[in-house]
Structures are given as structure tokens and as C-alpha cells.
Length: 157
Image (cartoon, rainbow, N blue to C red; front, side):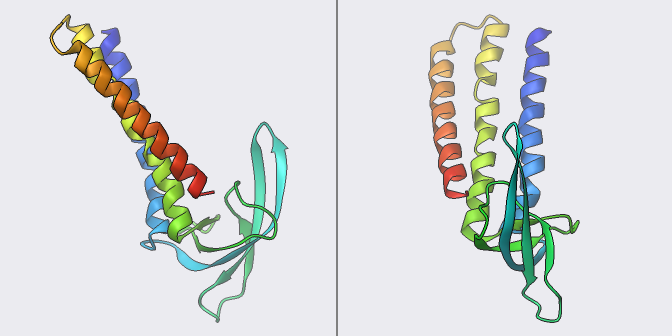
């Protein structure tokens, strides 16, 4: 019973990562949002690793006036980057290569969330055959997942 509960939690974590990252990836790829350019005006450190960053967003449509709005916390004051206003209109996120890499960096955590599920099933049901291979495979997938995630997050910031 505990094994099924832990597998459920791991799958829920994987689903949460996908559900929260997919909208930003769609925006970064140009599928959603209003395109433009963001110029970071300020980034205030709120403590505990939290930041409040504001940017002047200039729409690609010259008929619309620029607005000041929240942006990603890994931006620096004075920085300018291609961005898109979210469909909700509450913040701007980077588009193009930077936005895609940031999203891929987070999505790369999904294999890490599910890598050890086969090993847990083998141990949970007392199946001896294939345990070593499943552990080695899980560690290999986890290492690749972490490497991809770190690379994506570095290139996306």
C-alpha cells in the first residue's frame, strides 16, 4: 500500500511539473501570448530567494502603449529581451531560445520524478529479476535528467 502511495505522489509531482511548465513553453514557442520586448526596470530582493521584478513591456503592435508589469525573477535591471505577455495579462515571460531553455530545464525534471518507479514496483512485489538493471537505469535517467535540467536552467537565465 505504501508503495502505491509513493508512486502516486511521484506521478502527481511529474504531472504538476508538466502542468505548470507547459503554458510558459507554449508562450516561449510563440503559440500563446502577446509578443513584444521587455526591459527590466527593477528587481527587488524580497528575501528567502524570492524576487519581485518589474519590466516595461513594449508591444510589437505600435498602436498599443507600453505597460509596466511583473516579469521573471531571474532578470537583471537594465536587461532587455524578447518576451510575451501571458494570456492572463499578469506578467511577461521570455520568448525564443531563453524561454524555451528555461521551460525545458524544468520539464527535464519529469524523468527524474518517474525514474525509480520500476525499481519500487520490483521491490514492492518482491521480484528479484531485473532489480539491479532497474536501479542502474534509474540512476542513469536521473543523472541525464539533472544534467539537462541544470543546462536548461543556466541557458534560460
